[in-house]
Amino acid sequence: MRCIAVIPARFGSSRLPGKPLADILGKPMIQHVYERVKTLEELADVVVATDDERIVAAVTAFGGKAVLTSPDHPSGTDRLREVMQHHPADLYLNVQGDEPLVNPAHLRSLLQAMLGAPQVQVGTLCHPISASEAENPNTVKVVRNRAGDALYFSRARIPFERESTGKTRYFKHIGVYAYRAELLAAFPELPASELERAEMLEQLRIMDAGWQIRVIEVDHAATGVDTPACLERVRALMAGLPDPALKAGSLADLKLVITDIDGVLTDGGIWYDDSGECLKRFHVRDGMGIKMLQEAGVNVAVISGRDSATLRRRLADLGITVFHLGAKDKAAACQDIMAQYGVGREATAMIGDDSIDLPGFAACDWPVAVGDAADYVKRHARIVLAKPGGHGAFREFSDSVLNAQNRSAIYDSVAGYAQAMSRMTQ
Image 1 (cartoon, helix red, strand yellow):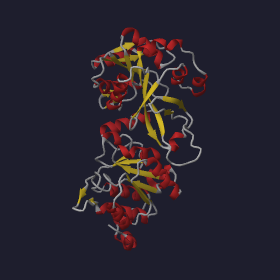
Image 2 (cartoon, helix red, strand yellow):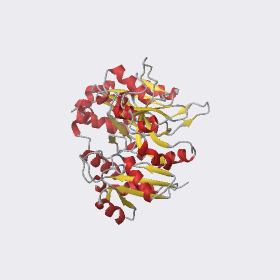
Image 3 (cartoon, rainbow, N blue to C red):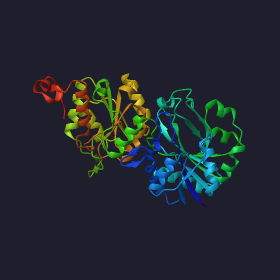
Image 4 (cartoon, one colour):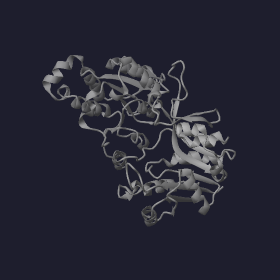
């Protein structure tokens, strides 16, 4: 089966004109997208579809392939059909040109799912989100059946939870598609449905016509570029620099810090003694950081995917009384903790290191990654710490919070520390 990737790249953008050519680390943004997509061995070719000669020239200059398409196409699917006339294939992967951080592993999962299910005409991606994010009408949600096919896409929160249990999972649609040639050929004859007009979602036209859309779950979505601020954030993330959205005083209103244990308060190592008891190594500076935040009136809670006597002993030593151990849904756990403290997401930070923490990141406005977290986790963090987990990363963050709240005297002066010393625990 011949598979081709098509990368639509329009020059015109109301918020960021010419963004496919925006420089990121010495390369135009479209080149970063092209090079990531090109790594997929399932693809026979990669083509940029654009409405502007300047983008064609840029793609040609770095050795890529581009085709000039009509500027009058009403949708990306129509533009894809024009490319289809010049580049025949059985399956077309559609990746947006403003996704320089697109994860090739996610694209590979989509392609392999389509190659393994020839009866499915369209495939796309989704990732889990929190219930609060599901309320945002700008976030397109999807619900699926047991086979993984879409039941419906909506800007509303779906499914609707009649009785709140905290166990309902919500999924955000990621706008990457794989189309079979048969569907693209038939697309112009599909009438716009009432559902499409109501939701302003083109994929509902496909479903209304009776076609299947297979939706593959991945762990997260890449950070795209829509505005100049988005561009600066992507530049910083790709360069390994601090997030430019972070302002020195922004942590001043933080009221709650939720932290993972393994990989944050520990280095992720696990040892077992002869009795089978799980042993872990914690850093005393992190313990001091927790107590200093508590002394300053900032609540600290813990979420962990594991549970053991060792963890409970450490939490007792630190005086942490609010925690979720053995948590599988960290978004729900974060929401429960925020409700217990009466703190909103805008005043909550979540510190994590791995994919299991991403739902927790989505549940609060201050996702924080330790220095040795995976790159795909760091991309979702508002703050990336310098220190690795288990080596003072929590203390690094707690000092930043105390500094922003003008409480640095707790850790950097004799008088300030003496005032709280009797309540401190390492």
